[in-house]
Structure formats: C-alpha cells, structure tokens
Image (cartoon, rainbow, N blue to C red; front, side):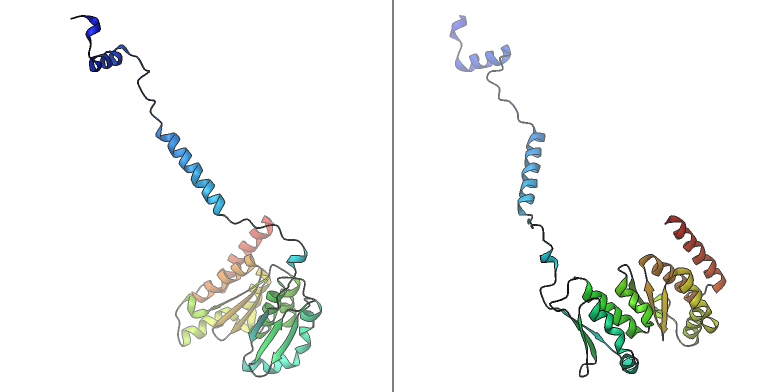
Length: 243
C-alpha cells in the first residue's frame, strides 16, 4: 500500500500517534475557575454592602425629640417629693427636661433643643431608675458623672429556688449582722448594693459588678462569709495588680 493513500481517519490517527499537539485543546484548570468564581462572589457582596458617608459634628447632635419614662412605685412617692431637687443635674448638666406625671405615676425625661449629648437620655434614665430602686442620691449621681457605671438586678431565687425560712436565711447571709457582710462586699468590690425583699440591685463598673455578684451567689448557695471574704479579696487584689 502506498504512503499517500491514507484515509482521513487514518491520517488523523497518524498525526495523533506522531505526537503533534496542534490538534489538542488546552484543558482549563478547575482551580482557576474556582478562583474566578470566588472573586466574582466577593465583588458581588462588596457591591451589595451599603456605603455610608462619614458624619460631621453637627449631625451627631440630637435632632429628634425623644422621651423616656421611669415608673415610680407607691412607696417611693414621698422620698421622690422630698428629694425632687436632686434632679437639677439632669437639667443643668445633661440639658434635658424632666417632670413627674401625676396621672401615670412616671418620671418623664425628654430631650430638647439644647441637648448635645446622644447618651444623655440613657444616663438620666439610669439615674432615676437607681434612685427608685433605693440607692442613695450620691451613688446614683455617679451614673451621670461617669460613663462606665451600670445597674444590674437579679432575684435570690434565680440563683437557687428557696422558700420560707431557707430564703430568709439566704437573705440574712447576704446582709450579715447589722449589714456587715453587705458593707464588706461593697468596700472590697467598690460597688453599691441594695437588698429589696428578694431582689438584689448592684451599682458599679462591669468588672466590680461581676465580683460582687459572684460573692453574693456564693453566700446564697451556702458558703460561709469568711470564705467569701477571702475569695473576693484575692480577686480584687489580682485585679488591682493587673491595672
């Protein structure tokens, strides 16, 4: 058979067997496809993400009138009336308007045109709430002057479901004889504590509230006060060394 008499199929087969690569197509890598797809998804997410321009100083001021209401229980009407002048810092320092609504029995705090601080309304509401919960005016005023103070409230029965005499003994362990245990926890943790029936209210910074809450929970669970004193003093000394 002559060499020039090859059929087209035989010729293509001969070319493939000869090693010519002109007829082969380059296989695309799957990895490159995945990278391109991931880049396209990132661009799509970036395009959907909203773009907010920077705010100026004038835009940070309060422009909308807002109001907060703090309910006052019946047994606090007389102390509130006698200490009404304590709300002077809310008006003079925070530039807010405050009044006591006789119909709804709420202390209403409202922003006005002179209010410049965004967080003033929240701080004023915390101050009124602290007074209503039973804290002294001096301690409650710290919520207005300082930024890193908080209020926390929990129930004794949330720690351990107690009833009757067991609940009374747990509350007595928290207070101590003549309030000695409560005063010691306050002085070591630099907090203020109010015991109202089965409620425990703590005023202080986040870390100090955590230490006081741990000590009170240990007392509720039955730990002796001497052991609780040692634990909170050790924690407080470590925190002082850290700072």
